[in-house]
Length: 97
Image (cartoon, rainbow, N blue to C red; front, top):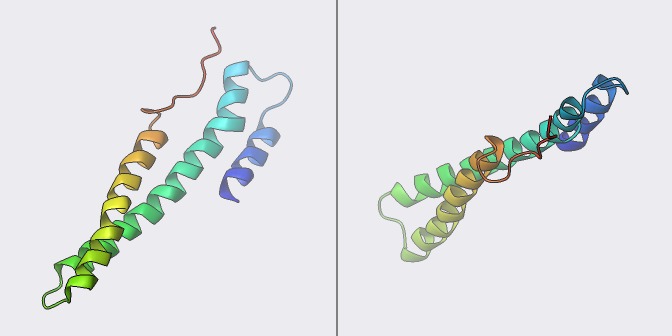
């Protein structure tokens, strides 16, 4: 929903007179970054929850295993979403101008 909203805002902000780079940024880049940001927030919540439960003393082994199973993908998701947000993994296409 947030990505589609950013796409709509980009369509409203760019007109036919906008440059190709501006249209790519407004129509696709903002939605891409919004999606990465939302995914990063959920990954951060998974990481924090997993590490909090993992750090608690006196937990049964299965609770520690489940919390580790949430913290590891949360950490990987946080790294991936940061890479996507800052265009390190998949940058927006260049216009050639």
